[in-house]
Image 1: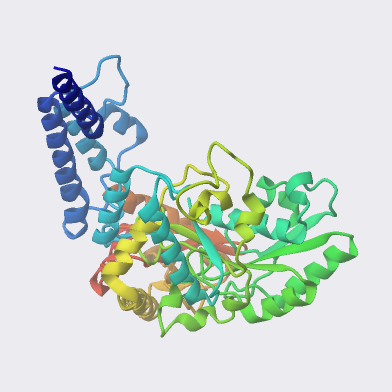
Image 2 (image 1 turned 45 degrees about the vertical axis):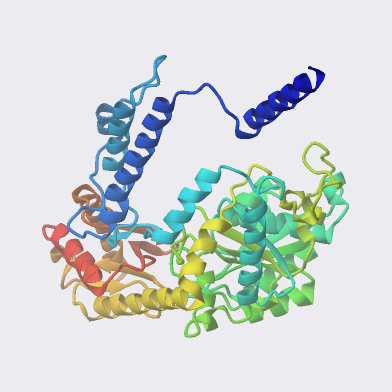
Length: 511
């Protein structure tokens, strides 16, 4: 009797352990089946509306509608009672119909473009895992993957032995670099702040990314203490003007501590003279950061990596694979030449997040070196792409983009009704104007180009409404508004570039 009760007790405890182990709940299998069907339907919808349409040039880049029109087409309100799966799916389809197909080979509006199938797959799996990358404990495989991807990217920059981290965008990477430089030069400021320090000033070219000024304000240095350095006619920083600005700041008692050089400027695609800038930074003991968010991918090409000559002498390097490498937005990394600076700059004693008595090496808890623990493991998306393509696949992709840019440059040069903004281009940015019928034959002076600048937004508006092709426009100091063409999508062919020029002509025929 006692033995029987004993074995019954063991059996009961085994049943309890099995329930605990498997998480058996009184949930509805029918409910799970409905959810599974919804997920499959959403995936099929996503494939039709993005992947398949990105391969079909007969579909538009967008169906333009005003905010008010979209508000009238989609039930945006959130209600006390939920909608059925079928209704939610219909709403999702309307969202696709009222969105821009950035994977379309005729989407040229931004520095990101394209839809890589392997990156897309990585995004799906990453969201399915639904974790964050602050401790090895909750993201073991993703942690070692990130470290491996960073290690591989460090080699291209020439930072063997350095470190890096994936961030939510290039602006964030640039901000982290500026903060690390401040603490590297003034270690006590991590605790005591900047109030007791001399006036800290930083420098960037007048054509650098706006985040240089924004980060200077955000970190407490002030916009006014981000000093713009003059550029030459190609958009490159003038080293002599940089040194002049540094000396002027020192004479006023300020402490120059940070210089942002650019590998591939946003507008003209210019690469600063890194070796000359590095010479100046070394003379004055100033941290050199290279914003390679756009042009850093040139390092992957044997043919074009010379554009980045000298970046190995910098202290930090920002790189956005979601741009020219076509990884899903967002995929951005900051690389540092010196190891352990991220930890020294950002670590805190946080017992509820980080403990040392773990069954693994806690140096793999990457959050100890970062500002935020709520961070997606974006490296995984790039890792899936890299495993599929290899270095050589990315190299071909970069080379094709620059070949396409060269083709478009020659097409603009040789067309009687187009004008290049600058005669020499070195990256995939191709800035140009179109001369409409009403201005042909006029003397091409300052007034003439001012008139051309007024034509550009009109043509862009018409193209946006038609939805067949999308290209950006901008202006620069003393240069009227022009089309800012950039090529990032691997699917772009020469016919797409011919189509762009033809569409501009068609939409400006009556101007």
